[in-house]
Amino acid sequence: MNKKYHVKLIESEREQISVVIDAKTTSKTVRRWCNILLLLDENVGKPIVHEEIAKRVQVSSATVSNTAKDYCLKGIAYVLRVRSHPKPPNAPVVNGEVEARIIALACAELPDGYCRWTVRLLTERIVELNIVESIGRETVRKTLKKRSFNLTGRKGGASQRSRAASL
Image 1 (cartoon, helix red, strand yellow):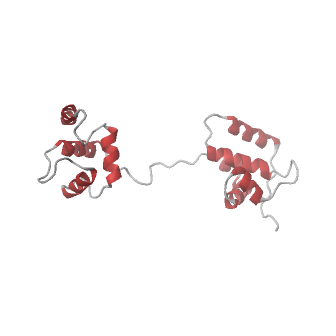
Image 2 (cartoon, rainbow, N blue to C red):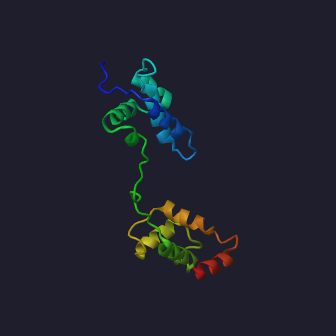
Image 3 (cartoon, helix red, strand yellow):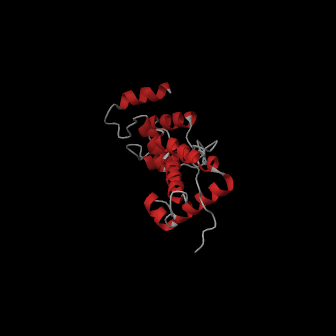
């Protein structure tokens, strides 16, 4: 199969790639793109096939093809750029106010018929009281764990209640 995009690095581009690879702050993904470009370089000899490069660098063959395409069409600076997102794709469910209300609820009186709060019971109660529209049990558990809050009440229950009251 004939390759559509041919990578022919010049010496300055190889040096630029070496600097990027050697930098301590370079991400694993950018290092992989650098290695792909070095393995695709036709100026140092006959390059190996995309599938072999993909195995060596531990990426898909589509990544190898896309890296070659980006280099040929947009240049080395485009390939080695750091991609960042201005904001996370999903906003956090728990902010400071919600966290304080969850802990205050965990410190509150128990519902009738229960001897202690459970994460499941807290989760249901949080949605019931419209603290948040929906929340998962794991999010509630992590929120409590972040503050070292113990639902069993065995270890430091009174001090946890006073600490939660100060939030």
